[in-house]
Length: 97
Image (cartoon, rainbow, N blue to C red; front, side, top):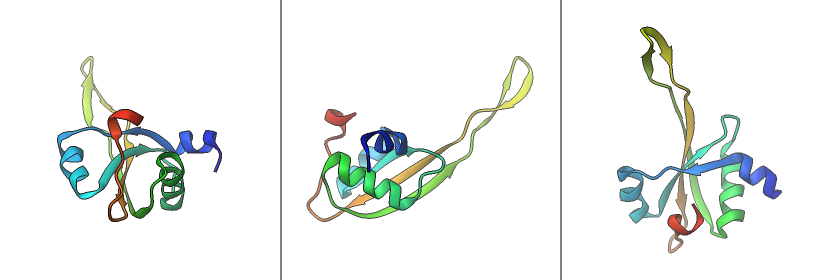
């Protein structure tokens, strides 16, 4: 997989309290492209961070409905990937982010 394809699949790491809590169990959260598949995400993470991926779960997050200048509108949705690494593998999210 080329570097261009890797960077188009993995958009950004999602840093939150929940992602920090599950990082202790070798799971990491990434924002990915809407058309990315589990195989794409697995290959991208393995190649970019040089780790072994055990499982990938994808979640489509719908955008919130908000009002903009008294008109209803919708924020953009996104797709998240929960990546579980093999036993003993870690990613330093602060160094690569």
